[in-house]
Length: 278
Ligand code: PXL
Image (cartoon, rainbow, N blue to C red; front, top):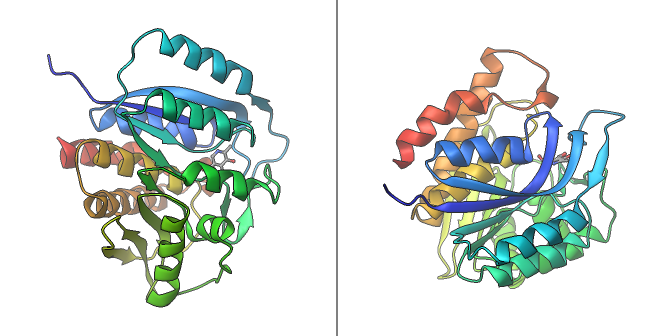
């Protein structure tokens, strides 16, 4: 029997509306990786587009879970952090990074999109997320999140390479080793990702833009990126595969119309994900 790689996904459980752990668990598993989880909060739905959702913070439980793991001599290949329940959880995640110090650290600083913070966070939150990015092997911000953490002004629409490279450089200045920036559009009608690695190499990848806002695509992108990187792909190849699978998931959603807030039909991409990585 081969030993599978293990990812620990640190993210919330939004019970309905595919995002965070309801995306990370099935996708990372489908890549042939064991996905352990550290839930940060439990919500009836995610916070984008539903009203009246429930929210239960799991900060106290997180400490107890990690304390137990310490006693198990657990092997972890990659720690993947996403949506946090509150700013105090940044220290908890840093503590987990130090506990499993041989694991890759991939931080998706989930907190904002389209120029705006998600409703659960206040203006101080980006500075906490910036602390978490320090020392990460890879960070996966969208343009809004990168701007909020670096103080660069957020610009809508298509971007110049100068603007994107200024953001990428500023992200590495936060102390991350590599960055993969999502939501990058250098040309009208195209959308994709840009990377900057520790050796100063930039890469760009884009596909035809599909109009509309699709909830949870950042989590699809992140889960594929984390899977590919954990299995030894380069930053550039992990970014390309994450773009390809995310676009496929969006296309599968357009064919089977549903309300966008319920997330994309990533389930129909799992076969492609497995084949691309195994
Ligand atoms: O997909 C990002 C995300 C994750 N978790 C929760 C969210 C969001 C985005 O709105 O609300 C709870």
